[in-house]
Image (cartoon, rainbow, N blue to C red; front, side, top):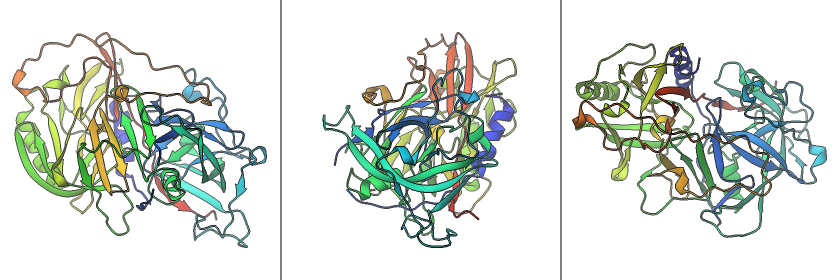
Length: 475
């Protein structure tokens, strides 16, 4: 059940398996978003989705947005094993037919052959003019996609919140025409495809920059409810905190250096490199740093402890605002004040039985064994700026970024209801209230944790994790 101990354990196991195969680039105009609009939505599977329009005439696809992988893929007309067009996991919310890409129906379709620079060097082709095969294995158990690489256009529009009223722009993108899906993709997750936002040459942001469509940067905003925004070419406001991206040979990832960590009124040095990953649900610190972190947290969390599998720091409380605040200080004196680092544990009767800190021991002292996960990014807009090779952020509600649904958007699923917050019980220890309390005006989404208030009962959804090992040739 979503929110149960078993559910959190499943996500924890997926987090531990997360790997990536990407590298950083840099190139150069307008602020753009998908022609379906800049809105992103987190749905019942806990993943972030957006509508993209591919081909001429365009076809709408409601795809997962995944910064931990690189390839865009959608179901192909010649699919052998694909999700049914009515995906059970999305009913009744996602009550529209899923998209199928038909190369013969798009006037802008082009083949991608084995001699194409974006075709994997390991592709097993009998001759260079063969169509390039692809396969992506995800760390979600037994989950993969395979097919052929194709090329077609994706349509973009100026982001109305920041850009001008210019006409549509297209980018010619190499993507997967998926003919075989397995695992979670056959059970409703990503039934309409997945869009990788990673750093390799084949990813959409890299392609847009290489073609001069927009700058080599994008931002993603994660709100305290189920919504978000995505804007390509956005480098963030100049005054926002920024930290340099660390370039480590053969490690294609967004890497930053944590100089020190503050827990409540205690600050200690960390000096570790960490992967900054919007796709990983929870946050993991290398063992030596986690040991210091846990010691500082335990000494200041004045609440009754409770034991749940997977998590170490759990408390039997009804108001998580009494837990100590957390702040991460990176290189360049850039500080990220965490809005919510906890997860709620839900019983079989759908009652919250405790809160656990979503910061865990990575189980390793090795270099680069720390990951800053999605749960520490809630209530922030994150800028992945590969022009200046920095990562930036601003604490904000995504509602301050104007929402826009494009003229060619797919039929939209039902909007997330806005619910009234509950009357919280009084805080018994005012001195321990965090410096950045949760906004009382919105249901709370704490990074990878989604908490919806219904009277005084909380329902929790923890984001599922998708990540790739790499693209490789079909056997």
